[in-house]
Length: 381
Ligand code: SF4
Image (cartoon, rainbow, N blue to C red; front, top):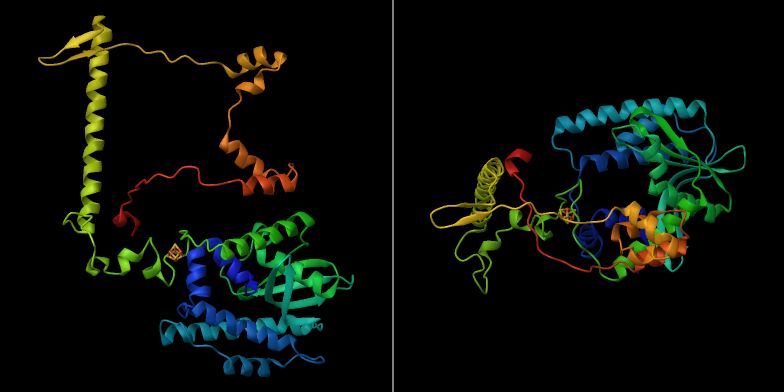
């Protein structure tokens, strides 16, 4: 299996099918302005810090480099590109001012790494690694995201966790600080290093993703980025993007109806059922009220009769039963097999980790049934 990168792992996590289309089938995603912008800014930060000896490049030299390395792909118009080009210069000038004043040679810039997590190879590039006065490491990753990062973003960020794993293995020194550098505001958002439990969780995640890929598990999972650049290959979007009705079919499943007709017919029937159900509930209540008011248990129509009865459902109070059975050791015999409690157990960190992993491995599909959900497309738009 080829080495995995953070980007691949995170794509597999959001949608395994999208991962497959991109990294196994080799489909190319579309150019996006934010990738071009991010890459240009990364290259400039790399250029600034990658000097052999101080001082770093002058502002003029850095801006010249910026212009030479500007990537134009993905912008929707010349105006949009010009706006971002000017914006990038502004950000970079501020970056130069801050980092020239406090310039320190990093120990690595855009450092490529390959590490092994058991039998899986993990690869990537760390934007910058500094050695702090304490002798420990500081990892910096540049981001051109719009919003500033919250403490929660930092604490959950998988990329930083994987980079800590890699850096500690390469330099054999502990990491003291992890930073997502918010380029747009030139703000370093930092947190302390990951503990052993979080590092271990990340290792397991890498193994889990590798396992899914090796086993050929590539289901489509809808997520916030849908539709991706390959909707014509996705079971959720294919019908919208490809004229599947034009493809020859061995049997006419829709019995001559167009798929759009079948969808609208289904929704209309559902609405009629809902309306009828509400009328039914109304008449039922009228009959119950009438029986109760007149002290009747049966009422008659011309062709039918309806019997009214209060049905009682007997059950047990859990506390009372427990109080009775527990002293005789019988309580465990009436406890049922509760799936949701098992799911809680899997995420409960007070339970031994190997038990939780073994339990998770036992999880399997025990029943599957077709179901339909309806949503109104017009409302969504
Ligand atoms: S559109 Fe389909 S394939 Fe693409 S990310 Fe969404 S679910 Fe996955």
